Image 1 (cartoon, rainbow, N blue to C red):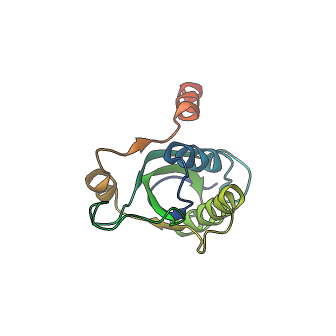
Image 2: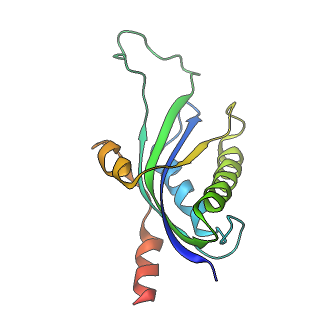
Length: 146
């Protein structure tokens, strides 16, 4: 029987210039809901966290972005699932998120990067301005577990 896991994650990807950050967060949350124990489609997982833009470290007036310049987005959070181990779960969520981002936004030049990180990094590095992921399903699962 696979162990229950809580995996702190960092997800980064390029998005089209006019992409909606909240929609990106909802896409990540939906993608996690259909993960199986090894990252394949199957049983539900829950992804909680926040999404944010990783904008350039210069003021917009210093170097305005071109209308067609991709924007770099990030997500810091936790994936709750079951699986044989962290490495396998992260590999599976990486494949699922890559497929979902490509399906929604097309080829943005590189696959999303998905990393297991330290829990402390999620707490310390999530910007105050970050938007929460869709958490309706998480509340349903917690209620069902009780």
